[in-house]
Amino acid sequence: MNRKKIKTTHVCTKCTASINPMVKKQGLFFIEVAVWILSLLIIPQTAGTSIFIAVGYSAFRLLSKKIICPKCKSTAIVFNDSDIAKKIIQERNELRSYGISSSDKN
Ligand SMILES: [Zn+2]
View 1: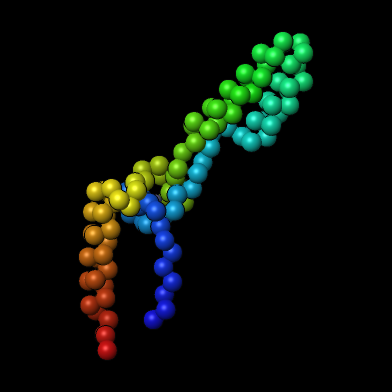
View 2 (view 1 turned 180 degrees about the vertical axis):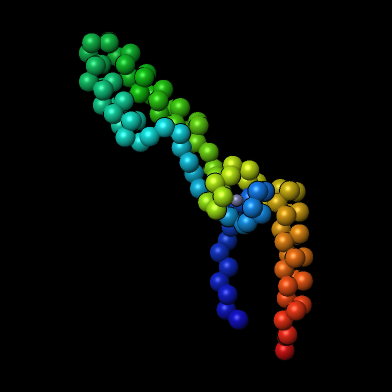
């Protein structure tokens, strides 16, 4: 048997899958770019204060970024190290061992 195991870092508490989370940012990239271009263009008129609008928007996007489950899009995901994750993994392994017992092993 040569099954390749992909290393996962998180467990989803909703669908109980071992996953590598997806990063989801709030807001849109092209809006961020547009805000930056606009604020840079109006810098002379606003004596430099317009840059804070752009910085603020970028900060908002960075701070509001979420990690989600790629399978069910839930934000209820936990690190493999956490107690909840360990419990889920253990329960899943128990279920799997029941399944294996039905198939014959040489
Ligand atoms: Zn999930």
